[in-house]
Length: 569
Image 1 (tube, one colour):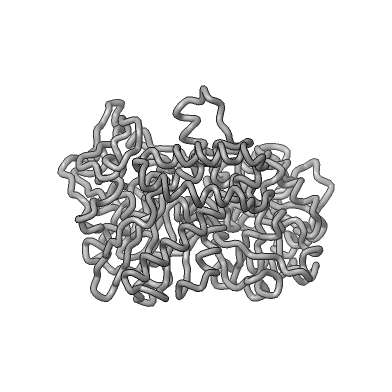
Image 2 (cartoon, rainbow, N blue to C red):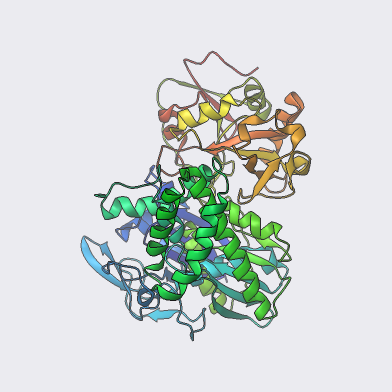
């Protein structure tokens, strides 16, 4: 008898479906990663769920039970604490051209409610299932983070910090031995969107006053990553930091949760203007202040519960902030710090399925790897391109000759980072390559590209180096290598490293090894292969129609623009 299968479904932004069979992940298909859809796309018709499953080579018949990600009732205009624990939130979608209202669990559990309880819904998902369950949005982050972690496989007790856009950071302790999840409650009274609330007071992230709600929501989702990069242009302003340190505790005691980010942003903006602080310095200082505050309050809460020196999992959208992740990793307060490659809502469908797997008595260990996204769509190749069989040695030769190459291999990555399967790779030995990649990607000039490096040499080149397969921590380029790989060193000397082991991804490891033999350098630039503001290219044909690079390699074939003068030997 085949193991039972669970499908997790995220209908709101970062819409996706995830399928777990037994305790093995079969696929996660995000709407943004098919048909060049816009980033953060939401599922507005239930018929789209069948389309998503098809891109993972699955059908609704493959699924025994369905779980919806919890949310809040979106007809309400402000996200306040009552909405987080609203006892009867509903999502509005369509099926067969008709409006459908779907009850779901609240954004987070109430303070006296077991996190894994969820709710059972006797109402159907039209055209999909007669009934479904729903788990809290925060529970999905918690469950996906823990089940995918190395601590689950080691059957270790671990702390899980969930900090998402609409909720303050909340701390949980997961004990696989007793099969319990204990909530330790809030760490800070600041929802994750407080970060961008302050950032948005400063150019280049200030929105026009007449921006509509759709523009505002997209800005909240897209601007934090850019702001992290922009912060690298600035430095700590100690006077502004002192103002933040004075303002925060006073406002935290007086202001309602929903108003605290706005009131804090007002104070910080006024202080920065009074002190004549440069925009990049203000953003850098705010990011540093929040990182220090989080580290201190998190460590204090764990100490009060006598939970020191235990492993920590970071998840929720704020776990994409690599500066904070690095600070918590390097602070020495935790036995280990781990972040999944899908900490934001791109992992919510998977998290909902994991929560149900945990609740229903299954194993609390997820068998998975980072490359279980949608398959490449098969389409005719557009005119103007030549295809020929090519080994990875030929790709390495092009890279060594200074040519960017798009690498489209196997299934897409999970989460928002291109980890080699939907990547543009390029030599890192010339600073001008960073400018070229940002130009062809139509990105701001201050945006960095990431280094992708052989894991076995990472500690020689980066500090601290070691294993970092998901691009979620900062490393510094060691002095001896700064001039050798200038294209991947940010303005502040940091790099968002991705390491590759032979076990993790044999093809990319082989390519890096060939390139190392030619160049003496085991590092390449890595940036995502996509249209601006869209998900990864879903097919070779789409990548070729884009035409931003002259060479695309996929599954043993090298596609070269007919106008290119460079050919592999």
